[in-house]
Length: 231
Image 1 (spheres, rainbow, N blue to C red):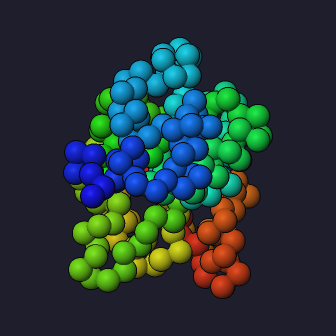
Image 2: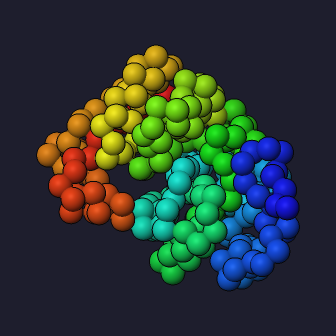
């Protein structure tokens, strides 16, 4: 049976009986840039010094849930002055994301297989700068809402992990989830600096990168809800 790593909800890669190409790629071909659930926490507090080999003042940003990595690669390429870490639980999109970044020549990107509900396993207080959360699972059924990423406890932890002045960018197509999130943003230590229920009809659109999921939702005629928080 697949073992869970410290009960964080991800199976141990080494225990998978029939690994796919993407599973093998995590610990093989892409192991210098993609870290499994056991390796990832070993760099807690040392991402700048040991992994990216940059100064302590160098920006270190995070994307939670990279999907297939179009935004991940775009951001890393367009911000070579910042180090960028992605978190993704699923093997295929994880490998797709880091491969896209490497194909763009990005040596400032790494990706981790981990559960984003346990960020304090991966980062020390004050280790992170900006954080991107794009289209997380909305968990729409009433009994599922406890599984949503945006919770008061999550925001408290994230706030502690970020440096003063850092930002959080949140996008979703779900009005129900957005209302839920905004209610929790308002109760959190963050300041809401941007908020719109129609990103593509707002003044913020010109700075926006359209993700893969975002394009699908736009084609379906769904508005994109967007908020930016400041630490």
